[in-house]
Image (cartoon, rainbow, N blue to C red; front, side, top):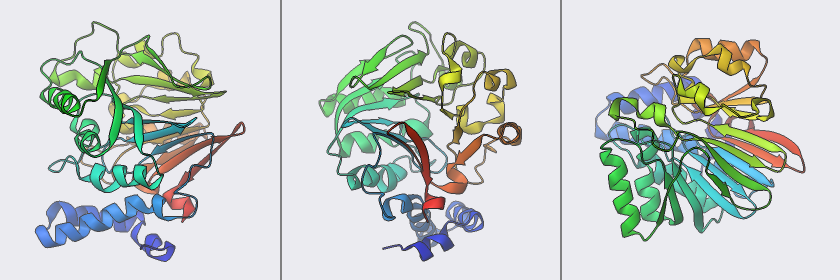
Length: 319
C-alpha cells in the first residue's frame, strides 16, 4: 500500500519525469519498475481518504493515463466512461492498471455508456481492455472515419461481448435522468474523416447535470472548433476540457474568449513528445486567472458537484 509520504516522493514533477525517461529508455526489468511506479502515482487518487466513494451528486474523474484521455462520469446511479487512454507500444496497460481498477474501487458493476471520441490510440487503445473486462451496456462512437481498423476491431469486440452499439453525431441527446444528460455537438452526420484528420472528427460532448455544465472536446482542432460550439451558450460552461491535450495547434483566442469557465482541464502526459500543453495555451488561461488542472503535473482530477457547489480534488492536493 502506498501511503501519503511515499506518494509525495513519487509524485513530484521531477520524479515523474525521471520515471518516464527510465520507462522509455531502459531494458525490461528497469522499465517494468518504472512503469509500476508511474502507475502507482496515477493510482494515488484511489488510495487516499474518500476516494473510494462517490461524494457528489455528480462526479467526473479525469484520470491520469499518461499521454491520453480517460474520463469517468457518475451521476444519479449512472456511469459513463469517455475513452480509456493508450500508451504507444502498450495500448491497454493504463486501462488495465488505472482505469479499470479505479472503476472497480468505486464498486461500479456496470458501465451504462462507453464513448470513444475518435480512434486515435491514446483514446481508443484502452477501451479494448475495458470492454473485455467490464460489463458495458452501450458503446457509442461516430462512424464517419474512413477505413479505421482500430474502430472496426473495437466494434467486433463489442459484438462478441453482446454490447449494444450506437452511432452518434451532432444533435443526439443521451438522457440518463431528469438531471443528467449528454448532448453531442460535433461532428455532423455525414461528415467523413480520413486517417490524417480523425482529430477533427472528435466527438464533442456537452455534459449537463442540473445547473452544472461541462464540455469535453477530444482532440478537436481547426475549423471544427468553431462549428462544434455553434449554438452553444459557452458562458454556461463551468468546466472546459481544452481540446487536443492543450495542444498549441488548437490554440485559438477567439474560441477561448467565448468561454468563462471556473476551471479548464488538460489531459496529457508529463514531458510528452508532442509538447502538450502549448505554452501559449497555458499562458492564456493564466492571464485570464482561470484555474488550470493538469494530469501531467497534478495527477487525476475529480470534478465534484454537490448541492449546487462545484469543487475539485486532485491527486496532488489530496496528498
